Image (cartoon, rainbow, N blue to C red):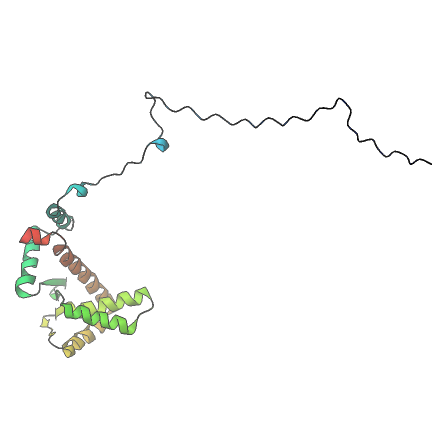
Length: 200
């Protein structure tokens, strides 16, 4: 007995191969602007903006920096000459009424002392490191407090001044720290690049 036919899958004789589907249409690029049409902001080539300071000489740049910090050239020259002739420059800082302090530029020895302390203590927090630096710089710069001169001839003298600094009321220490930062910024600006050309 013949098996029944499940299905006839043979192709008809006139069957032709299938054609490949047409490729998808690619949208045309927008036309480029003509010379009469302004280019879009995104199509413009980047232009580096030049600042006025890029055209200044070192001497002029130095003087502009002093002017920005409201330091006269005469005051800058006095600070510069004071450090070169006496080895330091000092300035009175008035707090209230007759209460005042005297800050003096620090010696390289003070920098080495601070560096040694930082290497020994290795403060983990940035706030701790900043406080330590401020405290040591203040003790090294404070040469008079409430009308009394403070000696800095020996390490013991420094320890005495440090003890005075650490016993100041917190708000008063903050005020002095702020004034010391202004003092240091002024000294750095006076001795910045261009100073030797101005005062030679």
